[in-house]
Length: 289
Image (cartoon, rainbow, N blue to C red; front, side):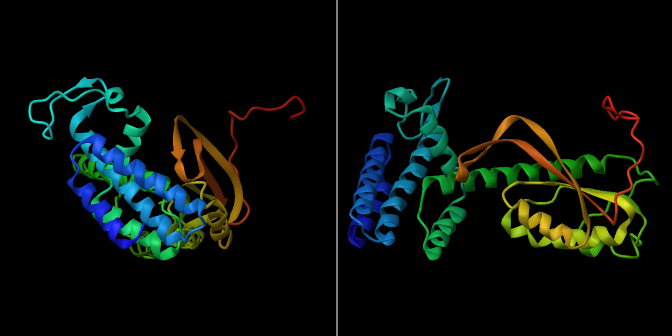
């Protein structure tokens, strides 16, 4: 696919208004991508074809968002008063519809930037990459919504002298004057899990080591993707105690690895040797004294 054909395909995609038109462009781009790959052509040509395919899936998702509800038909701005057929009538599976609408949910700036980043890295453009991006963006939106709701709810709570809420970067807000060294019994936190936030784990370990009382715990939720790096960062300042887990009731899909994850990890690190408190609910074995 040379530049002229690539531009023609993009133009045709921009002008397409129906699922059938977009699907044809998508299928042709995918067939061309497979042909170019089998012919041993370079990654640049493969990615040109892949980009058209992914853009077509995004366009299909946008149309589906406007026209289809899985439970039945509804009217569409694309077709005036014409009732839109169900997915099966359009030759679109529920899985395709779901994935294409996920890709369509990515803001345009993020979508275009991600394409360019992958090209610059010399990596292969795939739909899986954009499904993963869509999931991460949605998670961040949900987190932000929860933060805003929590902030709004907190504003309604009557002040309590026993509770102090501080907002800001923990490395700046929770300084020695606010939280003196060796005074805290527990640090419980849920940091960001992405690669861009890995540097914060070293700062968290250093911070916990300063404020914790000897023998007391840092308890931190963590993802699994960068677990070795997280543990290495914390071990610079604290002593590993245990890894606990919380089971999801619904799987969290990790698209790049094709894994359904049901477990949220919780890391326990102590300042020096851990000093456990007696646990009256601890299950004792037959040989326990």
